[in-house]
Amino acid sequence: MAMTDTEWGSSNRAESGSSFSEIIELNVGGQVYVTRHITLVAVPDSLLWTMFSKKAPKDLARDGKGRYFLDRDGFLFRYILDYLRDLNLVLPDYFPEKSRLQREAEFFQLRDLSKRLSPSMSKENSINEEICQSDTEEGALQCGTGSSGVGMETLRMMTAMSSARSQSLESRKSGYITIGYRGSYNIGRDIQTDAKFRRVARITVCGKTSLAKEVFGDTLNESRDPDRPPEKYTSRYYLKFNFLEQAFDKLTEVGFHLVACSSTGTCAYTSNDPNEDKIWTSYNEYVFCRD
Image 1: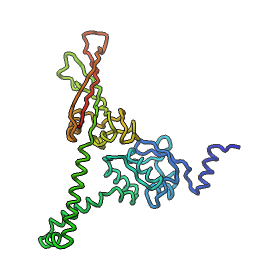
Image 2: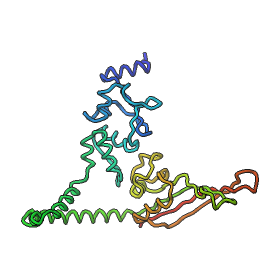
Image 3: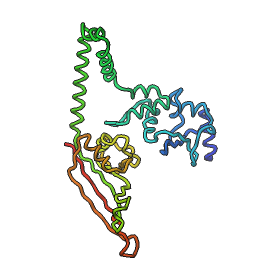
């Protein structure tokens, strides 16, 4: 005899010894996640562990559909959840939001994850060298003499070579990015005073995922294609701002240049009266390339 939903949920809670059901629905900044209760409490003393093991369901905030609500970055939370599943962190290539993810890890009190996202040891060594060089004359002499001085000099050379190599690899990432937008404007007697001459609803980004993330960083909205691998292509990204010039600036700053563009347009009247203003709707694409 099959159990009802109420009996099934009660059975799961009884087996786990928790007042929460086995399957938990979360609303994190507007993004919905479904996971197991055991995943959320995988790291003792973390914020989620405290929420879902030390508190009762009635004590937690919920949205209109009964999901537990967290007012945090919904897109970055998927990496938090991935880490909780097997306590391992795998990020896409050229991931531009590591500092923001570290901030989320600190908020959720995931200390080990926060340490993994901290700056690398080579960067810390470079900072220590600068402190040593800017110290007193006696300290500078100590850093520059003896066997320790040789070691520090070698470390500086290795750091410089690594930095130059990284920049060289970055410069070899060639490819194309296409920027598109649909705009509308009026043509009539009041065209000079029309404040909405070029109204851009949304700027789309097409190209390889890793290149798009490298160029636009946290200004890129990935909600329509959130799990696209970095080596794949997408046409479903769009930008969080509506200024074409801002998009062009970001592309030129990292070495892209315009190689082609196209535009199409349609015209319509606002009413059946031909003397009324015309509304033009256009779709424009700009193709940028980095060799």
